Figure 1 (cartoon, rainbow, N blue to C red):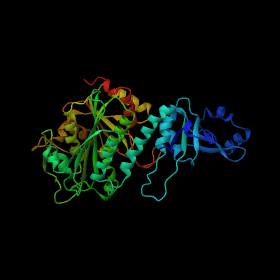
Figure 2: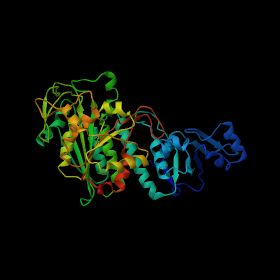
Figure 3: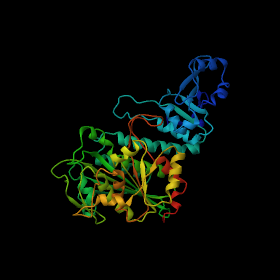
Figure 4: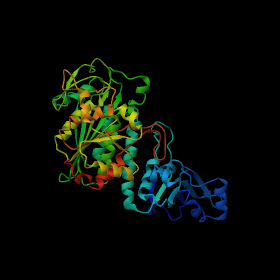
Length: 470
């Protein structure tokens, strides 16, 4: 990470730092006048006008790169804001750079974060590694937080991008354990048949057919006097669909089905690295939804930790099962708030696409503030309703509920299913895709993180101190 950022003190006096000018079309005529006549002619020949995504490396009289120009586009069409800076960090050659001009409406802290998250490529299995450009930042204290947000994003992406053959239940367990150890958190792990003994039966049922045992990995961190927050992540390391097996196309990127766990771990890292005043309880529910003689079946009835019985309508609706037991366990500690993250439904993608996650909350009061922070951080989410009449779609004649509500309102019925396991505690559910199908500034193609930067800043601003009574 040190190759992506540096402070002025890290750079030798003789080092050349290239200025970056990010401009809008209406700003460009004035900024243009700060360059030499030859440089102005160069920009005219290359038709640089400040339109969104335009890039130009501007030489000095010796032919060496002196400035970088980057177009932000018109303000009224700028849906990425300062995160657009991520379109430069993965593009520029290795050298030192600094922001010399940013649009007046951009937050410079966010531009730094955009730079950091844009400087990413998944190269674990490639012979060469990218030497990224380095952004020189004046404020060393601010850089601590920027690095943590960047590292959290990279961690999330790395976990999702790693193939299931190398990111099975044991490997994801190890990743969570490593993170806990990095920050001195207290770790608890429940594996295999211990899940039955410790009343986590739905996690066991989903993962019992795989060659690596299912498990619940938990860690606790922070001062017990601080407001308690529970983060819960769906960690299905590969999803075949179970006996309701997926198609070839549907299974192709199911290595990403542990993306909810990756999100929970990434947010936990951001919280711990920046030492937020939070008592954190992170629970990662891990299993591979495999097919073998021991696989659970359509029509089976599972008993949950909460005591509710669940008729299995579809074995491909497994994520809500492993989350159900983990949510119940998290609720037993009576946290101020629970947040779960899961690559849960295709219905959410049909409704909102891959990069706009729906979120559900059983409390109305925090919704506006959460949405406001997501907007400020250009980390969009969309509030969806816990429409109680749709609970009827989960009804079963032989159990308390089914695990699937059918083809209508699939994201809503999945959230309603989860709500039954939170014991009435304040709770938010984020149905993330965990995957960016088409690259855009700050978001390379492949495994990706959504919603967390906005949530981090909401928590930092004292979100847990709000009113959760209604």
